[in-house]
Image 1 (tube, rainbow, N blue to C red):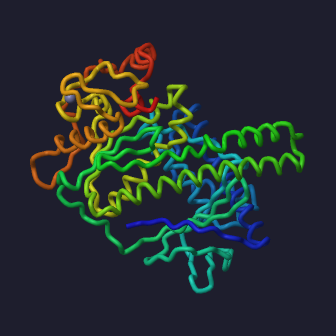
Image 2 (cartoon, helix red, strand yellow; image 1 turned 45 degrees about the vertical axis):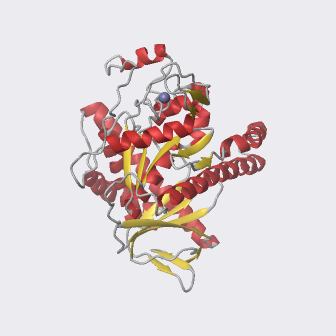
Image 3 (cartoon, rainbow, N blue to C red; image 1 turned 60 degrees about the horizontal axis):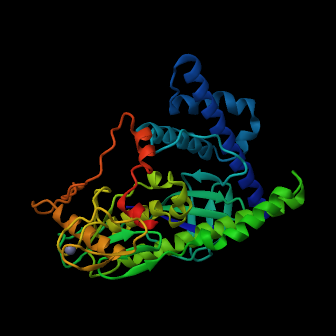
Length: 415
Ligand SMILES: [Zn+2]
């Protein structure tokens, strides 16, 4: 199994110069190839392949621009490979993945070294071609062979090395889903996650907390003269705060997903299959949804579940998880977006909105399990959705009229 370990590195001035050159060359090659691909398609409806571009780079581009030979040629080739992957991803799902964009020197910079990399835990250094013994903080050891090392620099000029390791460790096999060890999770903005076993994880609202400061810094930046040293300082201040927000976000999500996947009482997790993009189309929710970063939560949870042998069951996003009474199954259609708790008119049970939803999600997940042993499939919700489904053809218009596109139950409970 491949695992990546990311370390902060502190390159020497000499190494920084080499990195700056390599970032620039990789970016140049990437943009050159992207431009060629776009024009070839526009003018001749031709698709340029990776092999063709690599050969063209070697035979023409490198002759034309001699400085390209100063850096690791394998890094240049891998940036072409990255472009190829970007294209493949785009064509695999043109709705969710954007068309490859030109790289800018203002964004995060990176290059990849596919061979001859070494991590020395004794000395605390990382070695890549042309740069020996880069000082690094190796806060975590790994076992296995180093596949590739990616050097990156953030806009605030911090350097990192991401080491891809082929670890001998195998993912654990998930056990049979059972009721006692199943937990349902309802994601929300008030509390980031509410579990059917009663646990709640608070939403740290990292962006919300730093928003005033961010606005101030961005305003200061906009008032500085372009190209001045002070503008650069202001830019770094903004970048640092943005990185701080992103880091605290990652930190809390890692903690929550770790807690969920390392609980011996939890072997199966049920959650809604969220439509994050759809939720963000609602302007009132967009910022809060982005700040809560459900998408990242799901990504982290998915891979951790596969590592630690936890079943992950996603239920239909249109399942009425908030509106259904967990006790008698009555569907309370009039449930308002602002109602945090409600009383079932059938059986009189008083429900906390999120907790009830989490319990229902667990039930939906368990019901949707196939009767066959050892097979977990993606799920059709057993309960009927009362809202009209949107047709694909003229979907967007209709949805906008209805005020909210594919907004799931979870999204509604956020308000
Ligand atoms: Zn009821």
